[in-house]
Length: 322
Length: 254
Image (tube, rainbow over all chains, first blue to last red; front, side, top):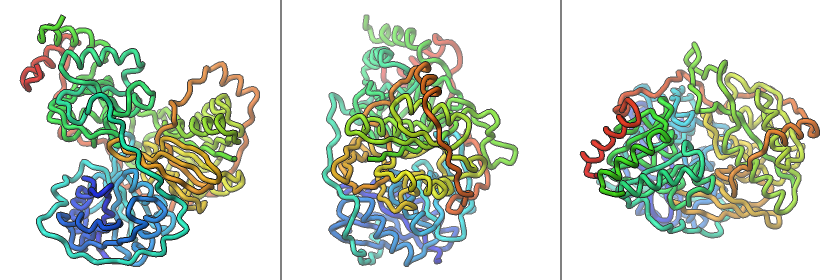
């Protein structure tokens, strides 16, 4: 085993995801402890230009038509060979639709430990993970063998993984990629929806705490009075109460409004990562321990149903709406 | 077609979580456990597939407090076999140990399709699905929110950021990590669950001793530091409203 920190670059349809740069930032912090290099690993087809602004000492590029789009089987095969051959100190994956399909299978296949939901590394280089919807942090030992980790945002900024100079590129051969059990049929574009919440300056966002579909009317009324629109977290969309186009979070939209007012949203990592760019987050929740209060500028522990009536009335009064 | 849905019980995050005296685990004494919500979606998806195309649905869960409720509820929804797994699920149990231990019980069921929640709130060594898939030598696809069975394979909707969906074709047998069922888990009246308690039987499988390798060694567990905590607005609805209006005016929203 060497002391290098590998980062599996996550990209989709020709674009590197923010988390790729965040991971490079984390890898640099860890590499300073281990004394190794930061090595980006890029799988794809004609994607080499993605590495231009990456802060890495080296980039290993595996180019193959079967890797053009992500499929778990082909990517697992390629990475299994590469990790076994190179034996780095650690391999970072995104805690995402792509990274989670890879890391677990590779941990079992290569018999290597896996630590998930790592947000940052301690001063001693130990991974610190966030579990229980963001309510509990866990510091783990970094095992003395090649360790796989999945990373969540929050500990490092994308800028920490960017650089003005192009890193050294090393081309690697792909293994035989035939007899694949998983194939991509097609992409289905996001539904357009009536509004694009990623462009709205005022969002009133509701979560599980809204309790019923009928209660959404109150949120709609408040949003309308404020000149904004209603967005939602996952449980509300899964219930079918709001369309997917209004979903804020990991599988939904990333938003950066002027004000993001949350009602009954706990602020689990999957939601938090998509609202970090908001200019101001104001959180209303009955649970004083809700993680949303750790990222909000203002908060109030109050039942939204106690607040709605008086807040809607006052906003309307100020706006001159009857 | 044999479909297996596997579930875990996890802390209800609505309750206050306490860390034990050693500072390395959750204090389980007063913790209320509920079904992992993604596993609930996995069970729903299994039932939907049965209703659509016919299948035998088996539901498996670890034998800890609350397991029978989940199993009988699944029976009322239409599950055919209910299986309780006895073994060491307390303390340091992790997903690697669980995945290894449950492999033989799963092989016995000869599943064509295994559905499990894409993640659970206590996961610290990845989620269960991909580990199971590899120990069973099956393909894995996670973040799934729609499943169609067709002729020795499944077509799944795999979610990506921004609302993009990838339609993936997967050869069976396979393991899927369910993000959301095609419709929300159905509500079952308590009376129906009680009925199931009288008629359905729960089978028991004893798991092999747990092998924790592959998981992490926890050094310490702590609550997030409140360094950048929000400025809290105290008081009645009227007082909170007054302050919110001031803030809205300050930032030019009103």
